[in-house]
Image 1 (cartoon, one colour):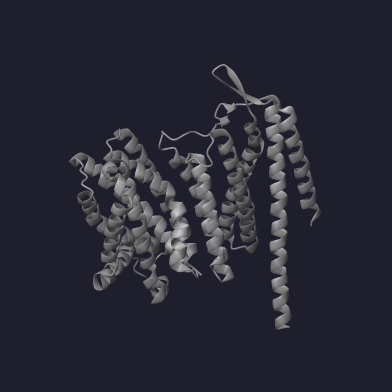
Image 2 (cartoon, rainbow over the protein chains, first blue to last red):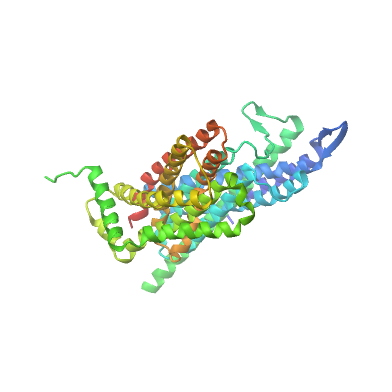
Length: 233
Length: 230
């Protein structure tokens, strides 16, 4: 493992642990009032992980699309590897979003699943990026695999916001809690601190994963190249 | 000096080629129409309990049938090109690459619309639905707007899927998640029209479909060259 990814991974891990500590021991519990009774919403704690994971997944999926476009524009193999590694890391985080999200819906809404815009968006996203991997594995020729992968990563990245907006067309559906609005974040002090620490921890951790994956892809290609050289020689 | 053929003529040449092929073989449109009608029969039996509530769910049924029918047609549209080497011919012809996309897309749009021209009245008759003349116009407009998106995304993705090992199986996997936003809006618009919802909401969905069409037309225009060139 390279030094840079090791440092990033450790920094990320430290921040994530700090995030856990802040979330559970420092940040106040959220309390809702229902009929003069105060209910502590312990399930809200998952927010400190669920949202950073979701935002990290978006960052990497968008990067995957951008690198894909750069590959098509320049035909440099390194961009294709960057795009693939970014989509892979993004997809892991999408799966984590689904898992943490479903846990939360069960705790807060008492159902495992609700057809609500964000949940629908993420389910579609999961399926769409699963399709990305199925597509790549279904193309034999390396150059075509790279091309189609890059093209679909762009199409998929474009489709994410569209799915989200479409989900909101129907105004009768239940609404996911909104934390960040145009007026700024609706939390403060220790809660915001815990959230931001988790957020940056998650991003650093994901970046280290990304760098490791990229190294692996490059090493694999080097080996393939050397093998061919040996056979020819 | 080479005589520059206008873009419109180049696109038209491809559409004409597809229409001629269809007129001679007659295999696509009729099969697609039969598929839609059969899907309606399947629905009527599978969802017999809600047949009295069709004002609210009819739009959805219609779109499920159209979606699957369009995938059937989109798959076909490139099978010939690929199997009989037509795609190479198209690529070697002096046609601008993005225009090949618009040609194929318009062909698909045409076939889709022709099938629906027959399928929609049959749907209304079979399920005993009625629409006033003014609403019928909006209904047709919604379907046509959606067809543009379906043909656009479908043409782009079926060109990719035809080049994979699994071919016919790959198209739905790629196509369905990408078409979901359009499906949501189309169902919301047609369902709204049939259940007598506020027209403002219907228009909002239609605007969304138009935006979706424009975005994916641009995406396809930008990407198609990379899809077909080796």
